[in-house]
Length: 64
Image 1 (tube, rainbow, N blue to C red):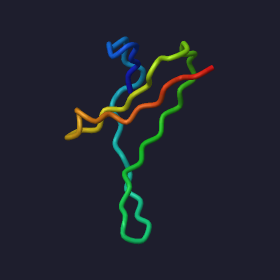
Image 2: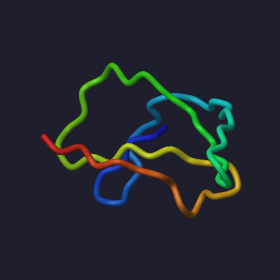
Image 3: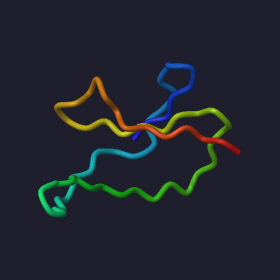
Image 4: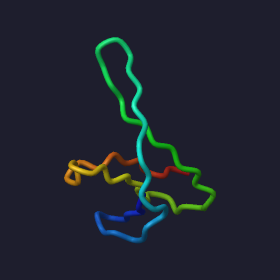
């Protein structure tokens, strides 16, 4: 997990974590959860890097 602003890396938030698998009908999902007990500024992006898919990091944008 890392924090980004304007497309630029800011800092690492949490270290690496193994994912668990879940399957619903024909689809398999990989799941990992993190507890983020920190404050984040407006418009910052929180992203998770998935091994083998570094070019497509799932992210959320902070809006408050």
